[in-house]
Length: 382
Image (cartoon, rainbow, N blue to C red; front, side, top):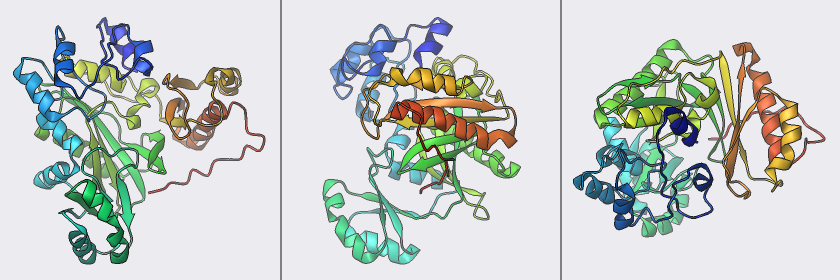
């Protein structure tokens, strides 16, 4: 999804692909296949690049340091990226910055987990510090007795991160971008809806959020970017907690264009993909104003329809204003394979915009319009 922005700006984009069948190969003409965990592969790939960036946080930090020492311009750098790679490091940094954190602890074993739960109250959330995403590596522990069943997690990785389970009204995301010279801009704070640990829908901006909470959330994201030396796009995922702290608690960080920012492709002056390119190249950042009073991004996951294009006539005819973004991935149940963006002329239209975006996404997923299409209840899950 960064390829169109690079083409428009006249930049040559190269991608180190994990395989011949990954979607980036179809979008970017120079896409050698290689293992990002192999240092020599990274060194070879980086030759002649003005800047090296990445679309996930799993590149080994030591490799990035070695690239920097070899003169490669890595953005964001490993010192910043570590806070998105390791949740324990992130939690300590948020405390150090005196920004709103849930209660948390580094736990080495079941006994530590039980002590934390007894002190803060059950249930608690147990997380693997590294490698988790889209709900993976996250487990809710409801009691000391249930904690006894986590021994296998500690055997696989220790220490783990324990957090108090937060009571929240909704989830938010504050998206910002920052250049190496320190210029930074924020998009409006958005409301994100998760289903089974996966981002399902985004409403931009977050409606009915107190002005002071939205401002504090943007300021927190900008401060994190500045204090940690983040470059490129940063997503700060948050829990809205009215009456607690600043009205929110920080959940997780992502240092890359993020699912909660996909709405910017069609709903903001500058998309997160163009902004990431501008930022890592230390160019002036684009305006982040919203183009409409409300924008909705609706993900669609793999379902019964293997031939997505076969559903396009019905899907596109059902809502001509919808913008469909398919990822070029093979269809597997539960896999993110695309999203639909749709804007509305008024915040009063939000329910209609959500239903129409959902209708388009469902047609593509299922290959047909549901015969008993019912209004979506839009229930959220923690």
